[in-house]
Image (cartoon, rainbow, N blue to C red; front, side):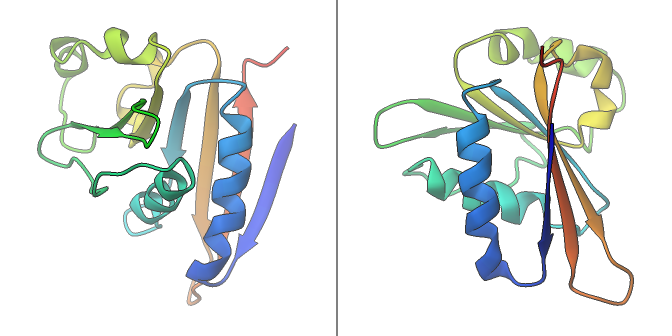
Length: 145
């Protein structure tokens, strides 16, 4: 099943984030696809607000992974694989310890490590309408029964 949102303003992102939080019962890994500037980090920030993350949410562009804590002391891991050049770099950070844990993993630029994604994950595709602020956001659980 695919859920599609048309988003023209930032204030509409909470509805998307609420849906993402509901889908989190299906899989703990979320792969955010979209071109540079599409709003992946902005959507992840809104999702983290919905999850009651207490830390400041920023893209881990240089550190590759950030850990945030929720009000329930649960971990949320935020990855940005934009700067990795080889798959081995994902192995070096111990990706499997994150992806196969119970904690949520939110991944920007998953196409860089696509073959490492678990069998079941949530694909979030953000498409930008040319010459517009409109975004189309598709949410789909991959590997669902």
